Image 1 (cartoon, rainbow, N blue to C red):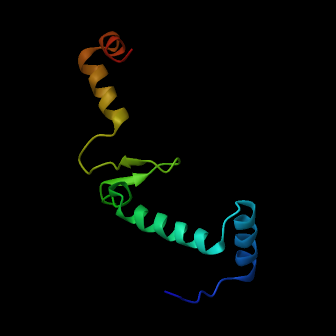
Image 2 (cartoon, helix red, strand yellow; image 1 turned 60 degrees about the vertical axis):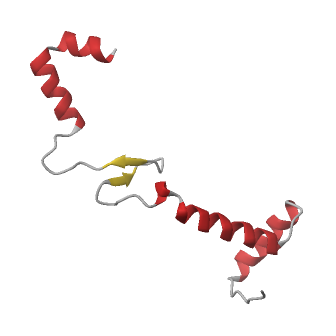
Length: 93
């Protein structure tokens, strides 16, 4: 099927240059990019509940702090108080 895309001139020039360096066609690059984008949307890691997960600086999902649940450091401080620092160090080292 044929379609028309309206792209910024600079993007089109850069895309054609990349296609030439890769010894492929602009059509093949667009097909590949669209397939990758569709696959990305179907990946469960990309559809995480934003109420429970957020992305860290590396783009990896991490659990967000849940209301009423202590943070990791608060929990470690509590364990240290209850079990003692030596026992905690042995458990985590």
